[in-house]
Length: 120
Image (cartoon, rainbow, N blue to C red):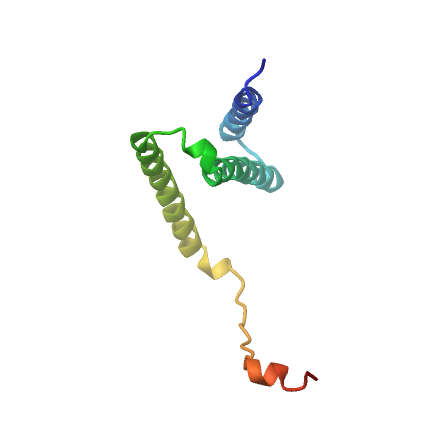
């Protein structure tokens, strides 16, 4: 019998190998760099979806002790904090390249205005 985690772990190893190849590549053109960035973000998204499935499954999460959950929580907070800080730094560094948009505000109709024409 194969554990559910075995294919996931093998795919993760394949992703790590591909990421290593991307990281070691030199003289990539802009398209290759963008492709590597997309692959990297897709790998991150895959991992986040897996984490979300775990955490939303309370029957599964009940198998962990409080100490194990706290260790996992601390690790996640540490990684996400670093990523958000990196995200902010890159955004600030390249802020002049980010398109400016105008936000249009619409006046919200009150519930009574929205239903005043209804026939009851």
